[in-house]
Structures are given as structure tokens and as C-alpha cells.
Length: 160
Image (cartoon, rainbow, N blue to C red; front, side, top):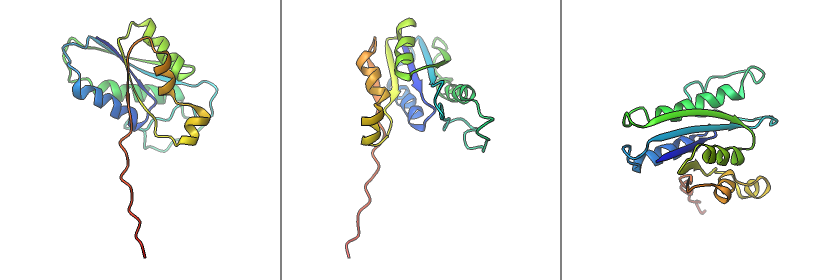
């Protein structure tokens, strides 16, 4: 099986990769492609939250979206270091619209499964901006595993 794991540098995308790893059979997964997509014209194109350097302060002018994306895909790829020796793990960073580039990479590389996280944006952001996971699902050339965020426990209100 050939699997594409998409990351946007979020903790949720790392959780999605770990979720896939928790049930997948390493002997049946021949290839994993870890993909990050940067938006070329966005003011904040890619924010790495998962690499070891993610917490380090850095100047906005000195940060590179591609470098942050490469750091994030390296973290996801490292999750599969202990898998079978027959599984090939590749990384790639592309530029463009995330849903389009994810589906294009899946089609060109002959992927049989796409794994990605569903963001935890609010309803208004989803309606106004749209969901990458929804767009990928709608046009994907193969099945898509969307890992949703763990619901936060509700705080109980104290009544006076």
C-alpha cells in the first residue's frame, strides 16, 4: 500500500500520523509520502508547531516557509523510523493550494490512501475559508482518512 500523509505543521497533523501508525500493518505499507504544502502568496503560509525548533523565537523576516515545512515533514517522517525496513518513507514540500497539491501528489504518485488532520477551526472560519480536509475528500483519487481533533472537555459552570 502507498500512503500519503499530509501535514500543515500542526500538532493535530502529527496526531493524525500517529493514529494511522497505531493501526496500520507495517508489512503491508510499502511507501509513505509525507507532504507539506506552502501557500506562496499568504502572509503566514506555514507555521511549524511540531519540530524541536518550533518553540524557538525567530524574526518574521528571517523565517522561511519552506524551511518550516521541511522541519515539519521531517518530524512526521521520523515517526516511521521504527517501522519495517521494507517501508520507504519520502518527504516532499510543494507550493500552492493545499487541497489541490495533496490530491495532485496522490494521483501522480499512485497513492492508495491519504491521511490528514481535520483542523479545529471554528464554524465561522470553516464556512468563510473552507476546510482543506473537506476539499481533499471531495476530489481525492483514493480513500481519505481524516483524523478529527480530540474534543476538549467542557468546563462546568459554577452556579451561585
